[in-house]
Amino acid sequence: MFTYTIANKQLEAVKQERDLGVIIAEDLKPSAHCTESYTKANRMLGLIKRTVSSRQPVIMLNLYKSIVRPHLEYCSPAWSPYYKKDKELLEKVQHRFSRFFNDLKDLDYSERLTRLGLWSLEERRNRADLIEVFKIANGHSALPAETFFKFKVDTRTRGHSRMLLKRHSSRDIRFHFFSDQQMELFTVQCCRSNICELLQITAR
Image (cartoon, rainbow, N blue to C red):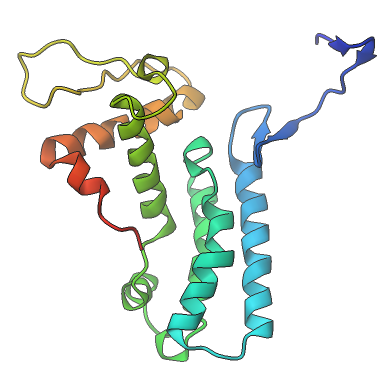
């Protein structure tokens, strides 16, 4: 293991580091950040439950969207989870919130979301990822598209002019990397409909 120094001071070796609010682990897996996001959001949800007596949906939804859900979605394209356990951990917070209302407790989770006018957190993360892919691939981001994507030049097949070439991945880290994780979904959505219209759908 190499040691690094700055101004003759040896840098401490750590297992994970926080950068711009996102926890980066040595194995590049998002589990540590998911756990912290869940803990913060769950703490804020408990605060709402203890201090707000009203259970009117309008009031509770505004509080949830303002001070709970942002903890679960901040910079999500950089750490979007791909393990089922991490996805379920984050979804537990919204699952708990949807049971705050007595008339919804006996319904399935999906039905509770429909009644409250909410999307699942995974659906919202997919939409956020698609928006980032669209912005980068079409030059609407400061990041050059060539850094993340390679475009298909073969025009003999059906599709659209911005087809992305999926690279070979031999490791899970690469397979679930941002540019590869959403590439297939982006290509499918572009073929089915106008991606601009798709991304203009207001997330709930």
